[in-house]
Image (cartoon, rainbow, N blue to C red; front, side, top):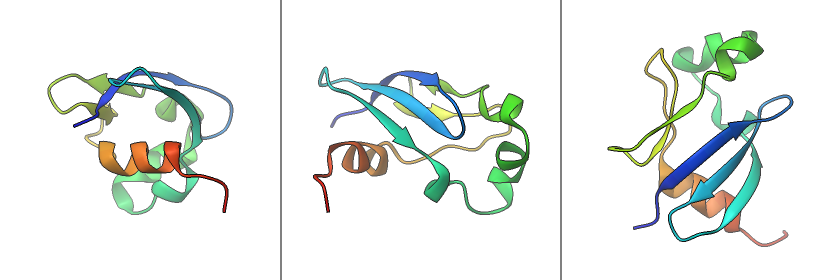
Length: 82
């Protein structure tokens, strides 16, 4: 299983992710920031920028308890052009 190793917030709702297989990718997380748990992140870039990696879960998390499935992030990062 490939998991998230590093995250760096960028402009807007973009992040730079490093994966445990050694690959890296920039992703726009806008499509994944849906629902009430993500509301504080959508309305405050400061809150969004508090993203970190939970090593136990192997994915990105925020202090309010929000997270995104690492498999979803990996697939999005490695999806070819459509």
